[in-house]
Image (cartoon, rainbow, N blue to C red; front, side, top):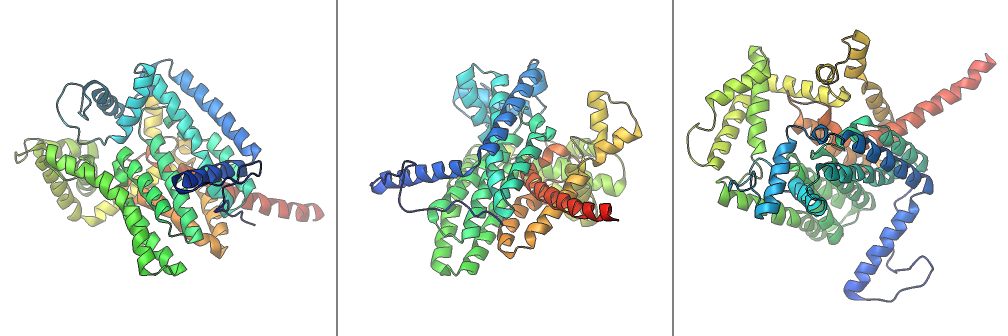
Amino acid sequence: MPVTWPAATSVATIPAGTVVSVSGQDAARQRMLVRSARLVSSIPRSAWTLIAVMAVIRLGFTLILGLDEARLIEPDSNDYLLSAEALLDDGRFWSSPGSGEPEFERTPGYPLFIAAIFALSGRSVLAVALVQSVVSVLVAVPMFLLARRLFNERVGIIAIILLLLDPLSMYFGSLVLTETLATLLIVASTALIALLVDRGQASMIRWSMVGLLLAAATYVRPGQYYLPLLVVVLLIWTGRRYGWGIGRTVSASVALLLPLLLLVGGWQVRNAEQIGSSRFSGIEAVNMMKYRAAGVVAEREGGDWREVRRDLMDQYGPEFGGGSTGEYYDRMYDKGLEIVLEDPVSLLKVTAAGAWRSAVSFPANSEGMFERWNLPNLAPIQIFIDYAMVPVWLLGFTGLLRAWRTAVNRPVILTLVIPVAYLFGLSSGPESYARFRVPIMPILWLFAAGGLVVVAGAVRSRMPQRRRG
């Protein structure tokens, strides 16, 4: 039977059994500490042992990879590192130290994370990678809780083992990229939303915590900007299911949206004042023109989307129409959107192809693998690289269907499916590859663990029949 979430209590009791009598803010703090301790103690020792093993393996891998710090840096990493240095040197979120140019394409969440580690480590890139390795391990905790809720403790343990063996999470956890920190924030917020949806709780404090986590995830990875809209729909649906009434539903919705309005909306005000655009991030315009529009034109007219991208940027480059930096990005987005909407069929094809590459290539598409690691160009190796993830997705769907058979699980399942569908719907394009699925891998692994148990049970049930025959 599925294991329920750890029960919440109104009386703060320490492990020794002594009741603590407190009130006001101290009482709230004490209850939070007790609930956290109860949550930690509910996770079995075997799970913590596996998590510790995962930490040792990933830290060791990062140390070896970091013998040459250049291997920890990807092209996108330089933008984050320069902005982090500007935060330390100038106290401003600029594109590089001393530039005086406000950063617009990148958001401040990840550079702040880097800057904090830089301040403590003497600006060591390896230190950033090591901290990220620990962050990638912490993801196992909310993943285990979700797996235990949908299935049982055994499936949660298997999910941790699968995450431990996942080279994608381990590799990208060592690179100076946003995916690892975003993964923790997305999975943690999803676990909290699942708890509230499962229990039908309208707690303003807890929904505000969801808002804070979603805002933090958006600051780290601006592609999450529209995800809260889907969470609001889920909140309203939960309110209808549990009969909250209009008042409690509105209160919970305000609690959810207020941190987003203050933090995300506040950053948009900053951009409007300093950049001349109210967009949360210029990367939205870049993605629309350089990837979505380029992919659509390449699909319609033939040719490589990279060459089409160069042609588009030659035609609609920084000098396109003049004006401020913000106005340039706004025009670039509008023109890219116009190109995309002219051919929705090509857009659908490009999105589907990108989603397929993101979902199944492991750890990258075969072309990238052969180029980077000089693998022999043999058909079996190419097939393995391109389709290695297909069995994992099949196991995931098997686990999802098994969990869906229990009606009480369905709201939690919908909560888990939302970030997966959102990621593939909005992030798939001609540039997509395995890196794009890193934030939803823990969700896939917990469903795959459930599917593995189902398949193993089916195999065992048939083995005696074969021996009797």
